[in-house]
Every structure is written in C-alpha cells, then in structure tokens.
Length: 234
Image (cartoon, rainbow, N blue to C red; front, side, top):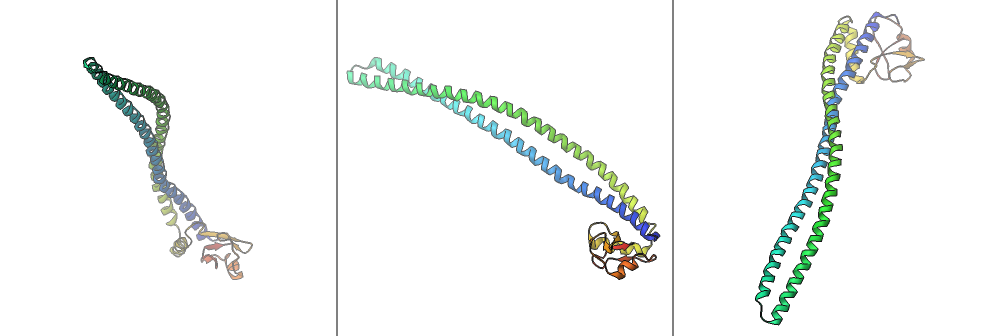
C-alpha cells in the first residue's frame, strides 16, 4: 500500500474503532447497573418475606396466648360457679365443662410450645440468612460504586478519543473522508477500510471482481468492494 490517503484513513479507522469500543462499554454500564440493582431488590425482598413469615408466627403465638388466658379466665369462673351449684346434674355438667376447658387449654399450650420452638428455629434461620444476604448486598453496592467510577473514567476517555479522531480526520482529503463516512454508515461495523488478499475483501471475505482487485493498488482515488462497498486497497 502506497496511497498516503489510505494510510491516513487507516489511522482514522483505528481511532474510530477505539472510540466505538469505549462508547459501547459506556452504554453497557446502565444495563449492568440495572441488573445489579434488580438483584439487590430481590435480596431485600427475600429478607422482607422471611421477616414477614417470622412475624406471622409471632402473631399466631400471641393469639394463642390470648386464647389461653381467655380459657383460663373462663375456667376460673366455672370453678367458682361450681361451688354454688346444688343439683347433682348441674354439678356434673359443670364438671364436664371444666374438664373440657382444661383439655382445650392443654391443647392450646402444647400448640403454643410447638409454635415457640418453630419461632426460635425460624429466627435462627432468618438471622443466618439475613447476614448472608446483607453481605451479598454490600458487595453488590460496591460493584455499583465501581461501575460509577468506571463510567466517569470512560466519559473522560470518550472525550479524549473523540479529539483523537477529529485530529486524525483533519489530515485526510475531503473526498476520501466523505467516502469513508458513507461506508461507515452503510456497513455499521469496522473495518471500513480493508485490504484485498487473494482476490477477497478483508471485510466481507467475499471475492471481488478482477477489476476491483486490479484497481485496488492504484493510488490517488478510493476503490470499493463490489460486494459490501467497503474501501479496499492492495
């Protein structure tokens, strides 16, 4: 290759490609941040759900305790009333009521003990899991901070890379530069300027015509792949 304009375009392309990589990396950061924030939200929701389940058990225990006390109060009334009963049938009926209430209290107390054990186990499990989750959340928040730092660094790099592109473009002939910009819009991805080797374009890797292959070594004007329209040289 001996065309100075192609050489200058290759510098533009190299700097363009570097700029594009920085921009693409910068564009990924909001997506990465959103993904991490989603994880944090899910972790916090898990803690909240586990805490809610524990509170539900504690509410159930409180309700059982209230019911036991209510039954005990009723039992005390029944015993007082029994002392005043004169008839045997009424006395036996009250005795049955007392025994039934005592049985109900016993069942409630057993359930309350079981629930208290469940609460203790659930609380231990919750605390252990909460510590793990909060540790993960701390790491995830640190990752967000690192992303923010990288975002600022990339924004600085974008400015420097754009200036480098602009400086390199200033040295290129307007005609070549116009063709380069057109190819860049058409192909969407680099390379925009590429070699022809073994009659194949280095961009699309398809065979070019004999005329294009022959003219690609001629300096002074741009030549294009007749398959993908990239600027080619030999």
